[in-house]
Length: 104
Image (cartoon, rainbow, N blue to C red; front, side, top):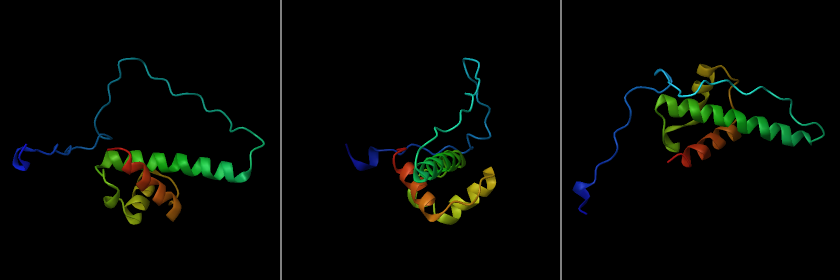
Protein backbone atom coordinates (compact mmCIF):
# COMPACT_ATOMS: atom_id res chain seq x y z
CA UNK A 1 0.00 0.00 0.00
CA UNK A 2 1.50 3.38 -0.94
CA UNK A 3 2.33 5.71 1.92
CA UNK A 4 0.01 8.38 0.50
CA UNK A 5 -2.95 6.03 0.92
CA UNK A 6 -2.35 5.62 4.64
CA UNK A 7 -4.38 7.99 6.74
CA UNK A 8 -3.84 8.77 10.39
CA UNK A 9 -6.69 8.68 12.83
CA UNK A 10 -7.79 12.24 13.66
CA UNK A 11 -7.34 13.30 17.26
CA UNK A 12 -10.51 14.15 19.16
CA UNK A 13 -11.19 17.86 19.28
CA UNK A 14 -12.96 17.77 22.62
CA UNK A 15 -11.72 16.42 25.94
CA UNK A 16 -13.50 13.31 27.15
CA UNK A 17 -13.61 14.82 30.60
CA UNK A 18 -16.06 17.44 29.36
CA UNK A 19 -18.35 15.06 27.50
CA UNK A 20 -21.17 13.35 29.37
CA UNK A 21 -20.60 9.67 29.90
CA UNK A 22 -23.65 7.47 29.46
CA UNK A 23 -23.40 4.07 31.07
CA UNK A 24 -25.69 1.18 30.22
CA UNK A 25 -25.74 -0.10 33.78
CA UNK A 26 -26.12 1.95 36.93
CA UNK A 27 -22.67 2.76 38.21
CA UNK A 28 -21.80 2.61 41.86
CA UNK A 29 -18.19 3.24 42.87
CA UNK A 30 -16.51 0.48 44.80
CA UNK A 31 -16.28 0.92 48.53
CA UNK A 32 -12.81 1.90 49.67
CA UNK A 33 -11.03 -0.66 51.75
CA UNK A 34 -8.03 -0.11 53.97
CA UNK A 35 -4.67 -1.22 52.65
CA UNK A 36 -3.40 -4.52 54.02
CA UNK A 37 -1.42 -4.21 57.21
CA UNK A 38 2.04 -5.59 57.82
CA UNK A 39 3.70 -4.74 54.53
CA UNK A 40 7.00 -2.87 54.33
CA UNK A 41 6.75 0.90 54.02
CA UNK A 42 8.22 0.79 50.49
CA UNK A 43 5.22 -1.27 49.35
CA UNK A 44 2.77 1.44 50.47
CA UNK A 45 4.89 4.19 48.91
CA UNK A 46 5.08 2.40 45.54
CA UNK A 47 1.39 1.47 45.68
CA UNK A 48 0.30 5.07 46.21
CA UNK A 49 2.78 6.25 43.57
CA UNK A 50 1.26 3.85 41.02
CA UNK A 51 -2.26 5.05 41.86
CA UNK A 52 -1.20 8.68 41.44
CA UNK A 53 0.52 7.91 38.14
CA UNK A 54 -2.63 6.21 36.85
CA UNK A 55 -4.81 9.17 37.85
CA UNK A 56 -2.43 11.57 36.13
CA UNK A 57 -2.18 9.42 32.99
CA UNK A 58 -5.97 9.27 32.71
CA UNK A 59 -6.25 13.05 33.18
CA UNK A 60 -3.58 13.62 30.52
CA UNK A 61 -5.35 11.32 28.07
CA UNK A 62 -8.62 13.15 28.74
CA UNK A 63 -6.90 16.46 28.05
CA UNK A 64 -5.50 15.28 24.71
CA UNK A 65 -1.94 14.29 25.65
CA UNK A 66 -1.48 10.88 24.03
CA UNK A 67 2.27 10.53 23.56
CA UNK A 68 4.97 10.30 26.23
CA UNK A 69 7.06 12.99 24.56
CA UNK A 70 4.12 15.41 24.91
CA UNK A 71 4.06 14.82 28.68
CA UNK A 72 6.97 16.79 30.06
CA UNK A 73 7.34 17.12 33.82
CA UNK A 74 5.83 20.61 33.72
CA UNK A 75 2.78 19.35 31.82
CA UNK A 76 2.28 16.51 34.28
CA UNK A 77 2.66 18.83 37.28
CA UNK A 78 0.21 21.34 35.78
CA UNK A 79 -2.28 18.50 35.30
CA UNK A 80 -1.76 17.40 38.90
CA UNK A 81 -2.62 20.90 40.07
CA UNK A 82 -5.66 20.90 37.81
CA UNK A 83 -7.07 17.64 39.22
CA UNK A 84 -6.15 18.52 42.79
CA UNK A 85 -3.29 16.21 43.72
CA UNK A 86 0.11 17.14 45.12
CA UNK A 87 2.81 17.80 42.51
CA UNK A 88 4.40 14.50 41.48
CA UNK A 89 8.06 13.69 41.87
CA UNK A 90 10.36 13.03 38.92
CA UNK A 91 9.90 9.29 39.52
CA UNK A 92 6.12 9.57 39.32
CA UNK A 93 6.40 11.67 36.14
CA UNK A 94 8.54 8.90 34.67
CA UNK A 95 5.85 6.35 35.60
CA UNK A 96 3.17 8.49 33.94
CA UNK A 97 5.15 8.54 30.69
CA UNK A 98 5.63 4.77 30.93
CA UNK A 99 1.86 4.32 31.26
CA UNK A 100 1.27 6.56 28.24
CA UNK A 101 3.60 4.35 26.17
CA UNK A 102 1.28 1.40 26.70
CA UNK A 103 -1.95 3.21 25.80
CA UNK A 104 -1.35 3.01 22.07
